[in-house]
Image 1 (cartoon, helix red, strand yellow):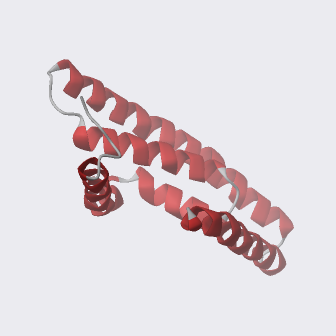
Image 2: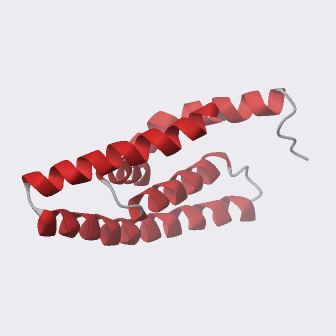
Length: 127
């Protein structure tokens, strides 16, 4: 819980600082243009990647396989899309990383371990 509160304070503060610095360095209009381009481009990529992940998830469910990786990929793509819609450079970088398979492959074991620990402690129950 303390990490969430810390993230809601530190991330916007860092984003605001970077936006002010960028506005002073390259100018107001280029900064706004970068924010708009990353937002629109990110939304397009998130939709495209999301549809691929959704198709894979549905295919796995249709053949009665566990959705495991496809479900984690879908969540990462959703989170990446949300981060890309938010204005700022840090959230855009993290959002773009979550949209691509390579970085998702690197963080997937951490997510799987987190879910496993939650299941082991009885905080997540699957029936």
